[in-house]
Amino acid sequence: MTQPPLTRQIKAIEEMLGTLLFIRSPKGVQLTFAGEALLSEVPNILALAQRAEEKVQLTHQGLIGRLDIGIFGSGILNVIPKLLGKFHSLRPKVQIELHNMNKIEQIQALREHRITIGFNRLVPNEPDLEVETILRERMFVGLHETHPLSAKTCLTLRDLDHEPMILYPNIPLAGLAQLVSAT
Image (cartoon, rainbow, N blue to C red; front, side, top):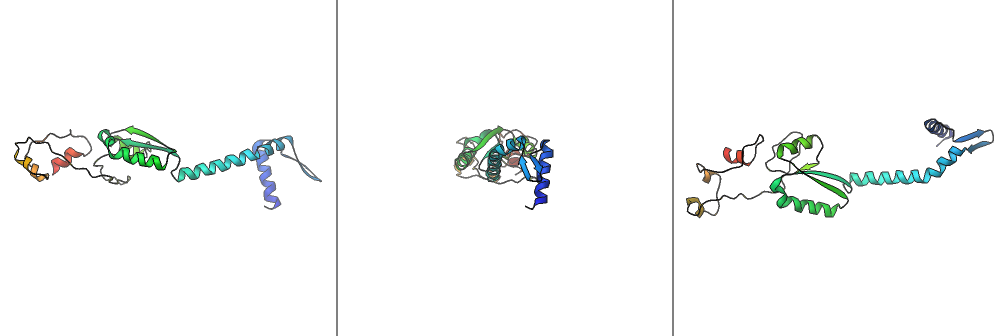
């Protein structure tokens, strides 16, 4: 660094701190008491800067920080705990916070950045959200043993046409009940 930029930097620091750091004379410069105090803190400042740089890099790599996750009732019974367990074993310094939310609450929380990821079923395609399938589940139908369809080992939704069903209640956002009813 050439002298003029260095001098400007020192002047800027002195103005910021509101005190002189050097006594300037024709023979050269000498540290003031304030300058000596600042000099004694330089190792701490450099160590803090190094720590901050490392923390930023670890956060960027996803190795430290906090992960807020939206979950729903039955979703926490199987695949989600396995995924989170694997994630935690790979990134033990990331704090995981679970938030029990329905589908509408999760979508809103994602948009407001209150959660980082949400787990749910039958999430609609939204232009501002990325949706990825992590599990396809088998569906089960409960039938009385004397029902004609109970002899089949595998049913389709077509097989259930005109059969009375008990489904989850309708909700404002499409879910399983709407999918079955629409088929």
